[in-house]
Amino acid sequence: MHRMRLSWLALILLAFAAAAIAQPLPGLDREALEWDVDGLEPLLPRHETRAEAVYWQANLDRMPRAVTSDPPPVAPIRNCAEWEPATGVLIRYPLGLPYGLLRDLDDDVTLYVVVSSGYQGSAQNALSANGVDMDRVEWVVRNNDSIWTRDYGPWFVFDGDGDIGIIDHTYNRPWRPNDNLIPVYLAQQLGLPSYSHDMYHTGGNYMTDGAHISSSTRLVYDEAASENGMTPPEVDQLMLDYYGVETYMVLQYIESGGIHHIDTWAKFLDEETVLVKDVWSSHWTHDDLDQRATLLASLEASTGRNYQVHRVYCYNIGGSSPASYTNSLILNDRIYVPTFGNASYDEQALEAYREAAPGYTVEGYYYSGFLSDDALHCRTKGIMDPGMLRVGHVPVIGEQPLDPVTITATIRAHSGEELTDTRVVYRHDGGPWQDALLSPTGLDWEYTAEIPRPDYFTACEYYVTASDASGRTETYPRVAPARVIEFAHGVPTAADTPAAAARLRPNHPNPFNPSTTFSFDLHHAGHAELVVLDARGRHVRTLVDRVCPGGTTSITWDGTDDRGRPLPSGTYLYRLRAAGLQYTKPATLVK
Image 1 (cartoon, helix red, strand yellow):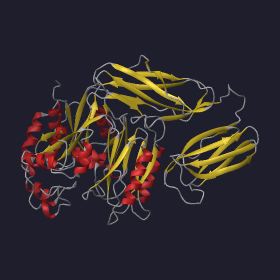
Image 2 (cartoon, one colour):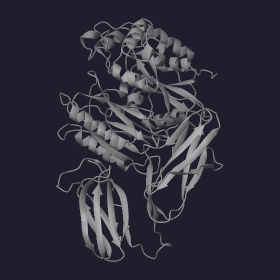
Image 3 (cartoon, rainbow, N blue to C red):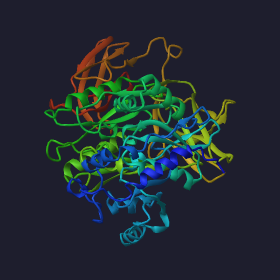
Image 4 (tube, rainbow, N blue to C red):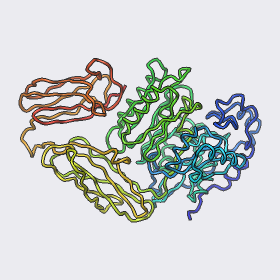
């Protein structure tokens, strides 16, 4: 049993203060934006209400203070990404979510339902009556203030010994002390250690890649300065000490007002893919969103490559408020996306996710309470698998020489059980799948295998798979074989031929807006075809289809299709066919 690492004096003081507002505050119903789905109470919005402000102004002596920080976990620490193996999801009753979502969630994970003792009977009856599998429900019976489990919920880390723990930040809504205590109580219930720190933060303003890179808006620095007296370097050091964050990308706000949470406009989909909100050109955040998308596309991911940035168009849901499609939840092999009641735009958003995260099951969920600055992600929080089997890998992409290709993966069974299967599964040119054993290198949790040299230039597809004696099996990509990694195998090198018959150069600039230049080399004059395809391989533009001279040919593309229509942001493929060879490279258009 893990020993709980808690500031007990601070816990007792907070619990005492929490009791002061265990009941709804007077006057709340006159300003609440929504009621819960069962009509039991008006729900606290994400911002402070007038009733809360009045109450605490009159009771300043009872205002809870930030907790005393515990020592951080044993280093080195790794903060779990949202897409890693999860066993549960944290929600709150009374609900700010549709029952249809709960019925789908319980097909995959356990529902951890935060509920006060006074509402538990109602919750039991309501969930059962609405078709929720009650065998997949675990009650967290504690006083609570609001539905925003993402903002106040636990953050999971693995410490240097490979053990999971919960980091409990100080919720940046001090007037909601019940919510602030939920991570500590959940840690007790799960039998996990918890580590509290006094720096103000909020889950909606945080995303991490599980590989020591995280991002927030400037809100984290501003609140830490005003509430904790911390400088940005001190914030960065705390994020390293408690979360293992080595690179903290803190971005400017996209607008002067609002809650400034990053999940209202951007989302990591994997270690090198980011989905960014797109809005109509006259909206006041349009230019700032374009700038942030361009900035992210220029930054290096943990894979060593730049982020691939995809955009999702968020239409006007009323009052010049964009839909919040980025406010989605990833759990295991599914992405749960909020929808807003416009069938055309909703389906367009779902397709944007399917293009950016191929292989995932993507479903939309409509709920009348979803708003522009909060939706599905804000009201849910994944519970990570303490015994997860983690498979990490930097994909091999692009052009590889006519040699064996080494595949390296990090595989760690946090269950403590032995690995029973570690393989690379591959095929050339769409042929039958084959596999190669991943063998330990001698470095901690590192394994390698070789994909053998093909007989000729071809496309290679592969994925990594591992199993352990606990019965867990995981892959990379995480939804393989629905999604695999592909590279060109067998590109001639200087040792193979004195001069390649044809060669396609990287485009410049990349990412680009509004135009980029493609170049290719022919050893001898001959016919060449250069076309642009979308990410699904569909033809969008022919740039060259003629006899070209020997040497270098360059052509500029302005991001339009064959009919001159501007194309949306995204990753496109440019393909050269010449001298009996075919080459393909990616190019990213960011608007």
